[in-house]
Image (tube, rainbow, N blue to C red; front, side):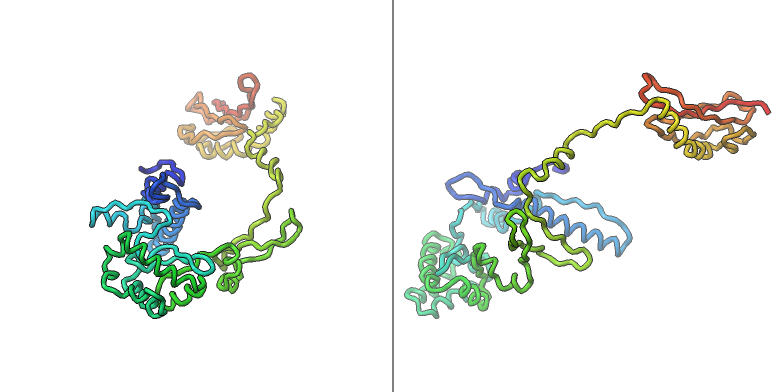
Length: 357
C-alpha cells in the first residue's frame, strides 16, 4: 500500500505487532513510545546511509522506499515461523512468561528480565540450571532432570509455573545487579529492570557523561538532563533547551498559523514607475533572448522575433510579446506600463512595431 498515510497505531496493526500487545483476556494494547515510527525512522536512516555509500562508489543515486508496515513486521520474532512450521498462532500473554527461563522475575531489590529459554541460546538454559543447582537451593537440583531439556515441557503451564517457583526462591536472596553480573559472566541474558534512580546512578552512563546539568529558568536552579545518545565530531547534537513557560510561545504559534497579511498597496502610478525602473534591464535582457539584435533602438536584424522564448513575470503579471507588424523592417522596442483591469496591478508589455529607416 504505497503512499498511504498512517499513524503509529495503524502501522502497529498493519505490521501485526498490535495483536501481540496486551493481556490474554483484554483487547490489544499498543506498546508505548511510537515504536512503529521509530522503527521506520531507523530503517530509513540506514537506507539513506546505504544510498550515500552507493553514490560515493558508483556516482549514481538510489531510489529509497521504506515500508513502515514491513519494519513493524520485522519485530514479530518467531510469530510467523510458528505458524508456518507448527501451525501455532501466537497469542498475547501480557506480563506472563512464554516459557521457563524467559520472562520478568522478582528479586531482592526489584525485578530482572531474562531470556534463557529457547528464545536465547541452547547453552544458556543449561548454564542457568547448573548455576541454580550449584547454589544448594532446595529443589534447585531438580532443574537438572531430563524433562527440563524438553521444549514442550518448558513451554507448558506446569513447566512455567514450576520454574518460576524455583527461580523466584533463588532470586529472593540476590539483588538485580548481582544477578546481572553473575548471569552475564555465564553468558546468560539477564538485565535489571531499572528505575529512574537506577538510571541516574548507572556507572556506564556516568563514565560517558550522559547526564548533564542545565539551568532551568522556571525553578531558578540546575537540573540534570539526559544528553544526546551519540557523539558526532563534525555534526554534534545541540543541547536541549529548558521547558517553556505557560503561554511563552503563543505569539509565535499564532503568527505561524495566521494567514499572511496583505501589504498596503501602492498607488497605480507608484507601481507603474517601480515596474519600469526595476524591470527595464530585465526586459532588455529578455529581448536579447528573443533575438532582438539591437534592443532599445531602431535597426535591422536577421530574425524578426520568431523565437520569442518563455514568458517572464514582472510585478505579478506576465510579460508578453507580440509579433512584428512588418517582416521587412527591423523591430523597434518601447516599454509601456499599462493599467490592468480594475487598476489592481500593472502589466509591463513589450510593444514591437515596424519603423522606417
